[in-house]
Amino acid sequence: MKIAFDPPHTALLAMDCQTGIVSVYATSNDDFIMRASGALTAARTAGMLIIQVQVGFRPGLPEVSSHNKSFAAVKSSKPHQEFFQGTSGAIHPALGPEPTDIIVTKHRVSAFVGTDLEMLLRANEIETIVLFGIATSGVVLSTLLQASDADYRLVVIADCCADLDMELHRTLLERFFPTRAEVITTEEFRDCLNCTN
Image 1: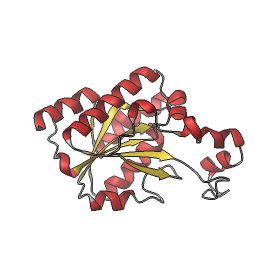
Image 2: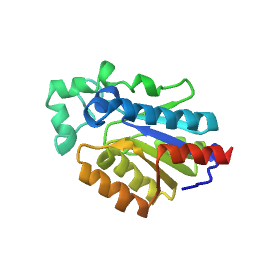
Image 3: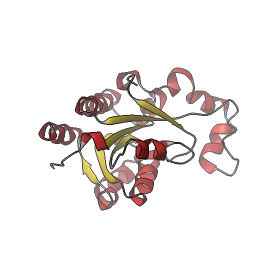
């Protein structure tokens, strides 16, 4: 699939690609990292804005309510908290961040909730968002829905998404995401950028 990109008005969001998360969710870490790294390199070379989104919390997780079913489990477990700290909580070293990348730290599933992501996108006159990350049914789905409602043009790099539920992963990528975004592979993304440049 050939998509025409306008790099100065396009942002690539690499979401929750933290070392610990990659080790749990990506069935073949090396292949996932190779594809994600390739997509990031192509986007940086094309001059796109790179935004690395990561999950992070203050000590004791004051951002998390006991009413939040997902994150309350993290708050009540010291090992789960440590999962998002140190080397495990850092963006995978093969993916950056590079000095020009912007890092957004979130405390919920969506990259938009409680962050300055929307401000960053508007300030940089971004019209198209390219998304990938872990998990497909988590941050990718939540962020895509909010971005769609905000009228961004959306592209999902399918083979740079991962999930523990493979059936749900496939359903989202093959049936649901195409109703709101273009869904392409890393190779197609790089080919599109080569045609754009």
